[in-house]
Image 1: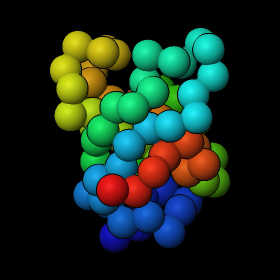
Image 2 (image 1 turned 120 degrees about the vertical axis):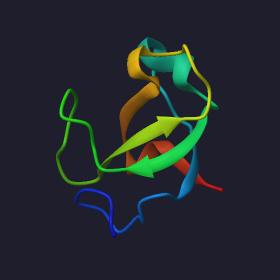
Image 3 (image 1 turned 60 degrees about the vertical axis):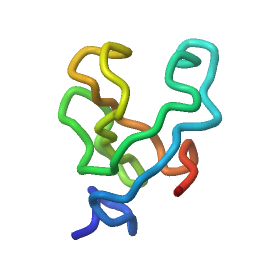
Image 4 (image 1 turned 180 degrees about the vertical axis):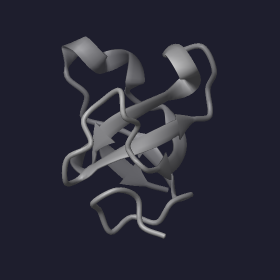
Length: 72
């Protein structure tokens, strides 16, 4: 199954990269791809990520653009 409006498979391991100053706390975090979460952007080329590290953000998940990840 593809995540959101992307070609990435749900469950793919990724690392978050290329974050701006406001979201620098996400830089380098690893997690699994899922569909974008409704609290954030759900447009084309956006994915949700279940983070492996707890306590970084509320719910331990976030949405990012596909250009802001590295597939592991």
